Amino acid sequence: MMVLRAVCFGLLVSEIGAIPALQPYASAPATAVLPSIASTSTATASSQLDQLASFALIVTTERVSNRTAQKRDGCTRNKLRVRRDWRTLSDPQRREFIDAILCLQQLPSQTPPDLAPGAKTRYDDFVATHINQTRQIHFTGTFLGWHRYFVAEFEQALRSECGYTGDYPYWNWPDDTENLEDSPIFDGSDTSFSGNGAPIPNQPPEFALTISGRPPIWLPTGSGGGCITDGPFKNYTLNLGPAGLALPGGEQASAPNPLDYNPRCLKRDLTSSILRQFSNATAVVELLLKNRIVYDFQTSMQGTPGSGGIGVHGGGHYSMGGDPGRDVFTSPGDPAFWVHHGMVDRVWWIWQSLDWGARWNAISGTGTFLNEPPSPNTTLETVVDIGFAGSGGPIAMREIMSTTAGRFAMCIFDFLLFFLSFFLSFFSWGDCCGLG
Image (spheres, rainbow, N blue to C red):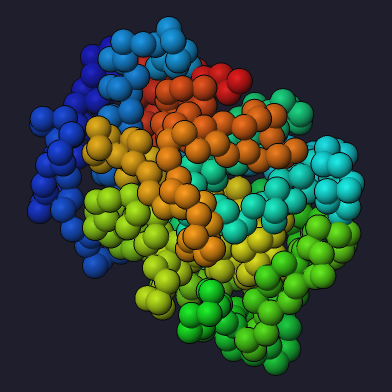
């Protein structure tokens, strides 16, 4: 059995080295070669993405295995937590994750009513925090790190408050670019995040996104638009917002106080063409390979202002559509937010791993949306906080730059399931590193 595992690991390494047009990275293992340019073929680009993720996993496990300060930061190979593509979860595993989210939506809020009168549940605590901090966590130096911490604290709440025991999943966008309604995330089954919204007759064909007075970006609407009617979240009530909801036809809706109580249904307007244009495999691989400095990487991921694009991050959000899918402030109100941002964090992890020595602590930007108004630069000592949503308290950016070191140490991500199953058993990985 040990020989078989060793052979499989050898196959993994040879798989990475078998791709044409390869180029070594600055701090990659000496024998590693990687794609140098994203393929225009989405099928080939999907393979490239798998290869880059495989390489990132090797870099991560080697780093943990060789760490000299394991006793200090407490993270060793047998404590790493794995994140998994939603498609690789069994039906019972999917239901357990969904049930844990439904549990949070039933528990009472911990946010003081004078701060967020509309927050009625533990789930609402996360939505309220995102509303409060949106202008400090998008197009800022904390965008990537803050959301990494936000997702980790949500996962911790699922585990400590609702008994979740499984792996945390992510949504691999490129797999769903053809038809979102066929996706296991949005097919409306009892193992999905519910499906499309009810069709709205004569819905305008486009909606507009505006950023700080720049020309609007017009995007297509989808085939739904109304309340979701099937799946586990069909009876879920969205309590907060809207705060900046883009409506079909070009208008925008905002409540006088988005933190007031405003119960309504979850609406979706699934739009595969948005995901296909902005979050396809070629776009993800190009994001990873083309941007060598973190400012370019995080800006491209969100959609470079003035470019007419919305990036892979925006592609995932706006392909969901509806309310709160088209509202950057209240977007966590859609439960699919959490697997979407699981993928956002995965892509950052891969990018960091491609040149770990130069990128693990790479940080750039200020503390305000597009630096409007001007604010101090974000540094590794900048402290972020997710308020009453999480239990971890304030934390310095330095502590959330790596997924396997520091107080935050908690996870790595999977790659091709075939190789992962052998690789995990080879190293006997267990549960997660401590979050406290």
